[in-house]
Structures are given as C-alpha cells and as structure tokens.
Length: 138
Picture 1 (cartoon, rainbow, N blue to C red):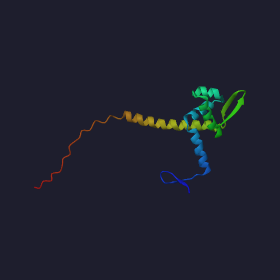
Picture 2: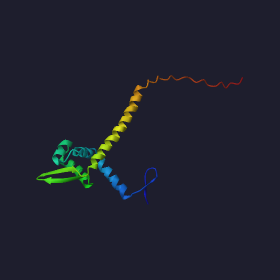
Picture 3: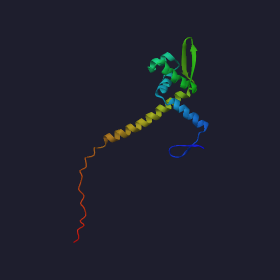
Picture 4: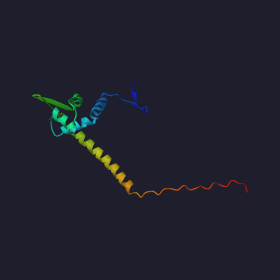
C-alpha cells in the first residue's frame, strides 16, 4: 500500500522519486553545497577543502564520502594526496539555477519590503464608541 503524506494524499515510492529525493537530501547540507561551489572551479585536495571549510579531517571526509557515494564527486590519488572534482558538469548548472531561483525569490521579497517601507505609516486608530441602539420603548 502506498504511503500517505500529511494531507492524506498517497505518495508514490517509485525508484525514480526515491533517487531524486536522495540526491536532494545529500545536497541539502550547507557544507556539501560549499564543497561543490569550491569544486566548480576545478579539483582540490582534501587538505585544501578542509582549510577552506575550516573543518576537521573527519567532518570533511564524511561530506566528501556522501557526495562521492551519490556519484556527484569523483576522486583520484596522487602520491599521498586525494583530489576531488565534480563528476558531472550539470552539477555546476544545478548550483547556478539554484542561485537564480533564490535571487529571484529574494528580489521579490526585497520589492515587497521596499513597497512596505514606502507606504505612509497608518495613524493609530482611536477606539470609537459605537452607539448602542436605543431599545427603550416609547
């Protein structure tokens, strides 16, 4: 039986949707996004990434492993160094599109904020006493 989400709508567990969700789950960590942005310009050693990220080797390795296992990154060894690079150039495009989407959303929010700032301030409303209907009989 298909799983249902919080609205009661059945969610398909089609392997394609599961794989896409896994991709976004792995990409959903700020450090991993930063790693990818650093690697857009070319491959880097683990040590260079560690220095840029200001993480210990364990933390850096865990993030790199998650990206590599998903097939987003590939690595090569040269002597005692391990170099990482983005496996598929479309990952760079994905990052660029994400930036465009966020920029557009923030621009819309900024425009709304600007409109609110430019509106004249509403004067405080004084409570007016509403007159009760006279129910006395004449």
